[in-house]
Amino acid sequence: MAVTSLLPPAAIRSDLESIVDWVEAGSRVLDVGCGDGELLHALVHRKQVDGRGIELSMDGVRASVARGLAVIQGDADTDLKDYPSDGFDYVILSQTLQATRHPRIVLDHLVRIGRHAIVSVPNFGYWRVRADLLLRGRMPVTDRLGHEWYETPNIHFCTIADMVALCQDMGITIERSLILGADDRAVPAPADSVRANWLGVQAVFLLQRS
Amino acid sequence: MNVAIDATSQDTSEAANSGPAGCIRLGLDQPLELDGGGTLSGFRLAYRTYGRLNADRSNAVLVCHALTGDQYVAEQHPVTGKQGWWDLMVGPGRPVDTDRFFVICSNVIGGCLGSEGPKETDAATGKPWALNFPVITIADMVRAQKMLIDHLGIDQLFCVIGGSMGGMQVLQWAVSYPDKVYCCLPIATAARHSAQNIAFHEVGRQAIMADPDWRLGDYLNQGTRPTKGLSVARMAAHITYLSEPALHRKFGRNLQDRKSITFGFDADFQVESYLRYQGISFVERFDANSYLYITRAMDYFDLAADHGGVLANAFRVTGPDGRLTGTPVKFCVISFSSDWLFPTSESRALVHALNAVAANVSFVEVETDKGHDAFLLDVPEFYQVARGFIEGHAARRGIAAKVG
Image (cartoon, rainbow over all chains, first blue to last red; front, side, top):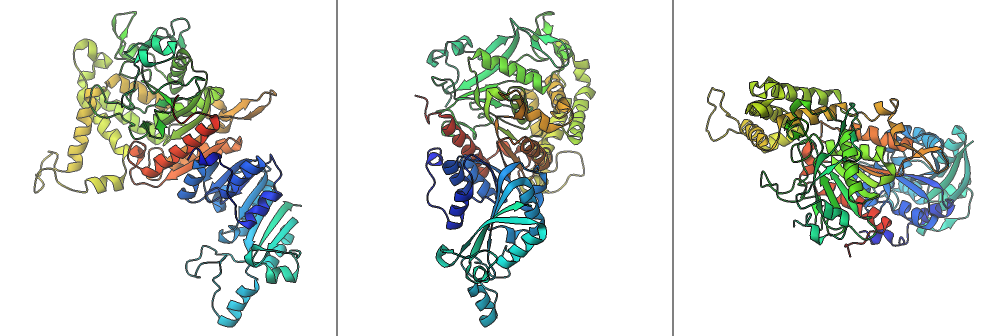
């Protein structure tokens, strides 16, 4: 275990790959919902960040700690209020916003705690999702949204357009965005375009409070 | 398994000074200053070591024991004959791997297994200290341990680890000597002793002091022993180390060696018989006055109070530029879901304070129904977390997997 923790991390998910690209080397990073520490580990090794994590599951914390990461068992919905403002350069929330009870409050904390927030969300406006609902009349189950409606942890679905609108409403600036389509290929379209909302399977946003 | 202090097998001259008995006198040149005023000079400190110190002296791990623990962390106990009290944590191939680390465990001052305490003889009078022993604090215990570490020629401990009162010492180490601790694991503990816990301790102390054989603490001179009082104190305390589900799972309402209740005050129920046994076996190995002193030390523990009422301030240090910054010590805080003596909320308060100073802290609440005692029991997830944290940081610190 000690040896593996020193090895450079293996290839990571494409949305995580872009997050690694966006983060400035040597910065302070808080990864909320860090899972087994995959992204944090990559950031520590490739960007030499001072990284911290929050993770709900004991298994996730255990795996992260075993990688030598500083991770706290906690809940994005309840524990972010305890973090001081501007404590981090980046606060990351990857594929988790839609699973929180109060996404707006969580988002507010993210841009308060971090100088920047990086948020990735699955897009409920993706054409296949819309087609499922329109043609089959059933709640969509896709790779990114892989649960039946009765057991999904994703309780607050949104589209890319919804995210753009919420940010506008909250006075949050979208500094950068990346739309990932089928097979995780980048869709060259701005986040507020109709094209992005149809073709994006997911979107990654770099946010800053105005 | 016992690789303890065979002086000839150790390559440090300081360790050789410790002698095979594992008990030294410290504070001969500079006495130990006590929080309550007064000093201890030339005091005894009993300890055991396991494994070997590496060439750059970077692999030392200090294990801090709990209220009724002692220095026999990973070997057979000389009085009870039982296995080391933390055999699951410390030993070859264990999370605190004695093939990799040089492990030190000392009996706290105020204790009763060789370290200076109320049972030992006061050199000034030639009689047992009894209640003339000064009241000590957790910080005093840690200052005594620091003298031992200095004596062993260790500048920085790789890790300090302990549960319950041991966890209090771990926290005190990090606060008192932040540059002498690389990483630490405070387990099932708190930054202060709660009102409820002080209350339970008071019940135990009153039980001891109500025993006519206590003789105002002078029992050793008068040839008596307050075994009844100490045993009741232990029984009451033991309940707080367990949990309702654990007691129910273990005993339920099962009867002890009988088919029906007796309509008397014998131990009808297994749980009564178990508690009586816990009480009786405890008095064989523990001194009643020590119990008073050590419970008092825990009651007085309050890190925030020592730092202007703000716990986070306890973890601020002066950086190289002269400005206050967060502690450099890396923390792994662990609590247990069914521990109602040191509940998870206490650990969370600690983590919150560490976060406020941007300290490097990990935290896990381990799911178990085994109560406070879980840190001593077979709870695999707990040892996995500890192992991950220790191995991760040992690799960063450049400590070889085996002492060469």
